[in-house]
Length: 87
Image (cartoon, rainbow, N blue to C red):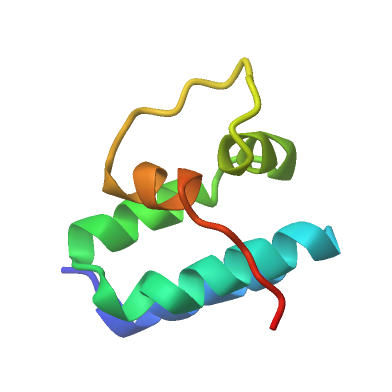
């Protein structure tokens, strides 16, 4: 059985420490907005999304063609439609 709290902590850490400031901000903001609204399956999908490299995630979020195939699911759709705003 998956410990949801531990999974959430790992997701937040992985979203926050990506290597590029732009992706750190984008993924941290996205994760904080949705993490407490997601069920266990969605959290696993989010964790899987974070397995991808920053360039592919950036292209996905900005609707730029990429060679990487992303299987369509709830998390992919949320991320594709998410707009980061630095407030």
